[in-house]
Length: 219
Image 1 (cartoon, rainbow, N blue to C red):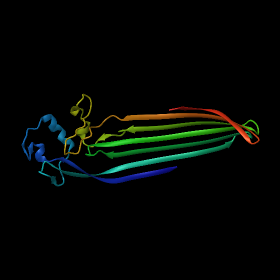
Image 2: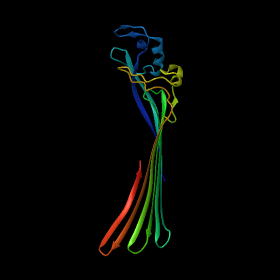
Image 3: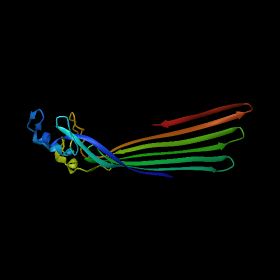
Image 4: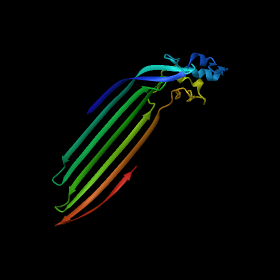
């Protein structure tokens, strides 16, 4: 068994609208701000650093924790079933959950990657010249995105802000600003499994040997 516990402090510096820009007072002149668009300003914090350029945008700096916990297990079995039969098997399991806030500190993102492999081989000696080897294997990869996602900013879970009924706020990209990646989404599950079966028969006589067999793989 091998375990890894990592909690790293990270500093993010993002570009957000200034207080004047949110009210429609731009460096190029005043504009009216649509109330629907104004609701989305909540996803960009007010600047806590210097204003940039003409003052329409500024820096917002925040610190957060990036947490990665990994658990890795491996096992091996060697066993003689009889004078003519032997068994060999290995197993490996790797589980890695990860969590970190999004780029604007609105949503806590949580992902989990899991990998497991198992293989077994059985050797049978029919005679001094004939040996059969049967092998089986299974590989599985599993990824769960946004598994533990939660709203740091309550507005990220507000379904009234969704572009589609019943959905959270949509992604927004504005030139010159750090993009908003969207509100709290349902988790996405990816799964891939592969099976392998092999069988080989080896016949040896004197200085010569012949090998027969088949293999099957399901991806």
